[in-house]
Structure formats: structure tokens, C-alpha cells
Amino acid sequence: MPPEPLGLGLDLGTSGLRVAVLNGAGAVLAEHASPYPRGFEDPRGWQEGFVALCQHLPLDLRAAIAAVAVDGTSGTLLLAQPDGVPLGEALPYHQACPDHAQAAADLLGPEGADQPAASASGSLARALALLERWGAAKSEVLLRHQADWLSGWLLADWRWGEETNNLRLGWDQEQGCWSGAIARQAWSAALPELRAAGTPLGPLAPAVARLLGLPESCVVVAGCTDSSAAVLAADPQPGDGVTVLGTTLVLKQFSPVPVRGPGISCQRIAGQWLVGGASNAGAGVLRQFFSDALLSELSRQIDPRRSSGLELRPLPRRGERFPVDDPWLEPILEPRPVSDALYLQALLEGLAKIEVQGWDSLQRLGAPPVSRVLSLGGGARNPQWRAIRQRLLGVPVINRPQRSAAQGMARLALSALPVP
Image (cartoon, rainbow, N blue to C red; front, side, top):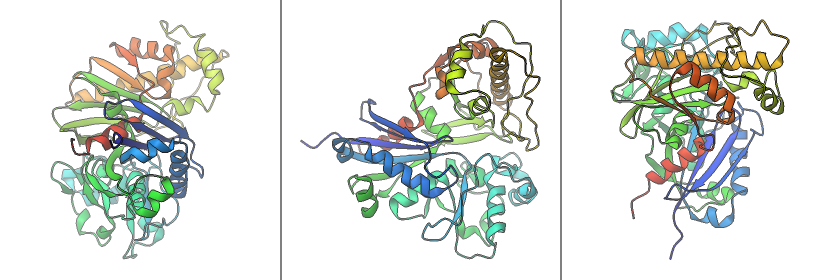
């Protein structure tokens, strides 16, 4: 009897790579993580990190993997040659390009003013910056987001892109086309051919299959963004919102109707609209001040029932994407009290207030109210932060730190296989 087909998910997250292997019942058979070997912006490190993680998987599991899907950070964009060789490093998701924001908005036109591609933090502005940097006259280049580029490497075919990864570049999922005048630009040939999340794209390239130790019959499936992959892993029910407490703070919920606005992502996945936004603030700012061990120790000293009395805006640097889209918004990290525990509490409260503003913003734009919040990511291991968030959000907060975006991708990969 042939082995049970397994799904492999790869998460190209903010702080590193993670792989997970699931069976058809959703059981996690293996999961491994590592930092980026060459830094976040270097695509060669995405390849090398994936190869290294696959080598950690038992041979019997690798032999049974029938499908693989990749997620990546929303908005991390690179320019490459037609054979996929990158022209320098990628522009990361958090790097706004305000000098190109007006040109991006002009390409989208009045009807695209509310699209995520219209802002300085959208991929369209980054695309214009990359084309300018390398010479807009280049006739044969590729513009690819992080997950799309690595999927192209798996296939040895860089034609394809996935819809949700390209919303910030100007793709209109409702109309099934590029918005405004994007498709009429001289560089439009650099854009990918888009497929919906969960679409089989083809088998692994033989050389890549050998390098990874996977079957050549393994199917590459179009993935999605990292935050959406985490939502798939959480398996939310009606009325649930999902908050990913990673390096950045990400809010997602399913909505019966699309929701539009600056800094808002609106993605069609599994027959529903998945709406939300990603702040530049998150657990990453905490590591600017405290080690993981100190975070754990100081957290135990916090009484989450009482307010710190401080009003902080814990951005890691100038600029915000959501719940406000403002590339010039400054962090507020002072005053810093003598007590480190009190300062940590104030930072956690500041992050929770950003979360409150985020859910309020989504509801004002037409998303349904959230009656429960599921928490994922490393920050979901902190019980004091959960209690602070529950006090400020006013709804139950349930931590599920064991769910990962890589697991969501493995689930999506398996969903693309034919039912036996």
C-alpha cells in the first residue's frame, strides 16, 4: 500500500523560516524553524534555509510529501532577471517609498484610491522604486513577491504569482485584472500571471526535488501571504478574529463582503473574503529593550488588571501601515519609568491599543464585529499580554501559540490534492 500523501508548508516569515508536515487528518508530523541564513532581504537565503530545513525532515516523511505550498511576507518585493536570478536584494514589506506614492496612486486612478497598492507602503510604490533603481528601460525583468519568487524556484518556472500576494501591487481580485493603467505600462511584462491560492501550479523541477530530497511528483501549490496562512492554521469560526502576535501585529477576519481602505488587505480565500491589516508594531519592538528571558521574568511581575498609566506607541521605527497608513508616524517610547516591569506593561498596553484601533477600523469599513479573538505567534505564549488584551478588547481572547503559518500552508497544499 502506498504511503499516505502528506502536505509540506513553508513559511517565509518576518523573523525566519519554518516548515511543517501534516497528514490528511491535520496532525502535525514534523515542524522545524530557523533564522534566515543570509538576512531577510537576500533571496539566496530563502533557498538555502528551505533546503536546510528539509534536510531535518525524516526520510520517510519526505518520501510521502505529495504537495508543497509557500507563504511569504505581504509586500516584500524583488526585481529579477527572466531566469529568476535576483537583481540585488528584495525591498522588505516595512520599507515605505513615499517618493513614489503619488506615481502609484496616479497609475491606479480615482477608483483605486482605497486599494492597498495606493499607499507609500504598497508594493506598487516599491515596484516603481526598484524599476527606477535598476533602469525602467529594462525590457526583460520580473517583479516578484517573496513567496512567488521561491515558488518559481521550486518549479524552475517564474511565470506564476498568487493573487493575495499581489494585491499590494495592484491586482483587483473582484475584477480579476490589474487595476487602473498598470497593465498598459512599458514594464507590465514584468508582472506575474496570477492564480488563486490553493491552485496546483505544477510538479517540482527535477533538480530542485533532488536538492530537497522530495519526490519529483510533488505538486507546487499557490500559497498566500504569511498572515493569511496563520489564519488558515487557526481554523476560525464565525465571529472569530485572528491576531498574529509575531514581530509585527496582524489582524485578520473573514467577512461576507469585501472591505476596502488604505492599509487594508482584502483577500478571496476558501470562498470568503479575508480582511485585515498589519501594523509595523509588534513583539519585535519588545526585543529592542528586553531579551526573551527578561521578557518572561518581567511579565510575571505585571498585574494585567491595572493600567500602567502610560501612553506609548511602540513602533520600531517611523512609519505605520495599519490601523493608520502614515509613513511619517513617529514612535512614542518615552517616558521610560524606573521599573522595567512597568515599562514592559506600558509597551504591551500600547500594542493592545493598536489592536483595539485595528478591529474598530475594520468594523467602521464594513467588517462584522468580532466576538472572540484567537491569538497566534510567539506573543500568544504570554498570559499577561493575553489578559491585558482581553481587558482592553472587551471580548474573550484565546491563545493558540502552537498553530503556525507553516501548518496553514501544509493544510492548503493538501487541499489541492485530488480526493482519493
